[in-house]
Amino acid sequence: MDPKDWIDITEESFNYKLEHFNIPMHYQEDVSSILIPHGLILDRIEKLAKMIISQYNDRLVVCCVLKGGHQFFADLVNFLKNFTNKEGKNLPIALDFIRVKSYENESSTGTVNISMTEKELAGLKGKDVLIVEDIIDTGRTMVALLEHLKSYELKSVKVASLFIKKTPLSNGFIPDYVGFSVPNLFIVGYCLDYNDHFRDLNHVCAISETGRIKYMNES
Ligand code: HPA
Ligand code: MG
Image 1 (spheres, helix red, strand yellow):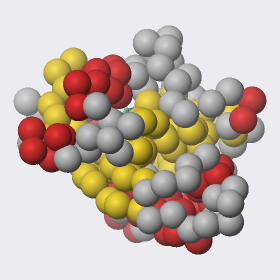
Image 2: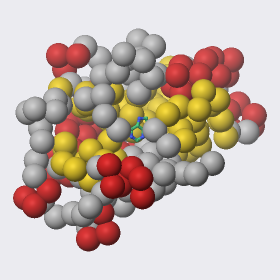
Image 3: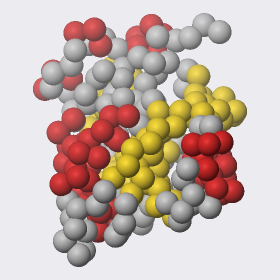
Image 4: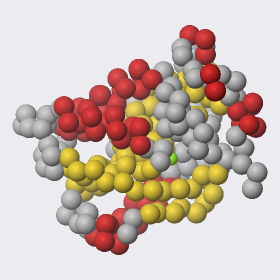
């Protein structure tokens, strides 16, 4: 996707006050600002779904990258079911799940662990697959996953990521569909986590120093 086709979130322009939205009590101290309110996220996903459906004409396998991609995946699939393609057809959608883990605290550990059996991967042969990810940061996880999928002869593979981070550490990977680009901050909420915390926060927020320390992993 061309950068002009996604929403660019900057620290200056999108910085909502916490008191203007509902934040669960248990996270009040742990986030410093709201970058993207939940409603805006949903509106954007609706548009992505419409674009995606218009570019397929056959059964689509939507593959969720767990755990972070789960909320985006759930909302995206709901919208995908409601839109029709260029020929006015609803498309059959199959759901698949893959667990990929590479983050500890705020950094990529460098090792990408992919949990799909040979049999499951072989089952993707000849299919149109859409991989659904929460965020592209360095891009390493996604490039490793796509490399891994190469030998399984999928009919097509595309990537939808709700966020892409503007980081100098990027390897240049750009997904086929992007919701928002976000500043080079560690963000949480809408299923994006910090050591498995904050997935239950609806809005996408910047983590505060208090939150960073409270939920830091020791090891
Ligand atoms: N937040 C949560 N998970 C992530 C991020 C982030 O900013 N970047 C990569 N994984
Ligand atoms: Mg992730």
